[in-house]
Image (cartoon, rainbow, N blue to C red):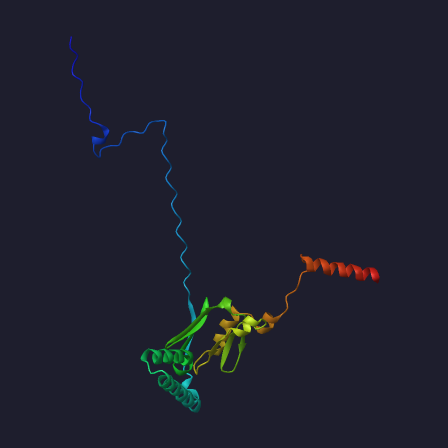
Length: 213
């Protein structure tokens, strides 16, 4: 007796994008990876105060001499090496160094830094780079730690006052960010006990002195 023909079955790789084959009970589903935490956004710096100063018109005679020396230096560079690229480079260097005096300057104080902006020059430093401040009649100096050679070699940031600059507000902001010279220069209290070879030697000397006495 002949058996009925068996129905043909399509291989699984020809079944198309239908339902996927069911997972066997012995293979548990892998857990989904945890979502990645997004990096915290940097805190936006907020400007506290800004003012503008132009030093060139304050001292006409000195300013005329500065401009004359600047033009003579550019001419001397052209006379020594008459190449356009060299003269442009020398001019840019001189203007960059003299820009805070020659052009109007915008000084600014923010939550995180202090500095200025002007034509061809800018300087912005975080408050952590300064050690203390000194008050003058025409401005305030944000100074480095002058107790070390490195601090004396580094240039501080002098912020000039203008005719309409709120001096009291400037000093209030600076005092809230930096310690006064008296506080900054105050010697730190050393603890009674310190580790290390030097501390051990000092304790031995003290004991010997007590025994002799």
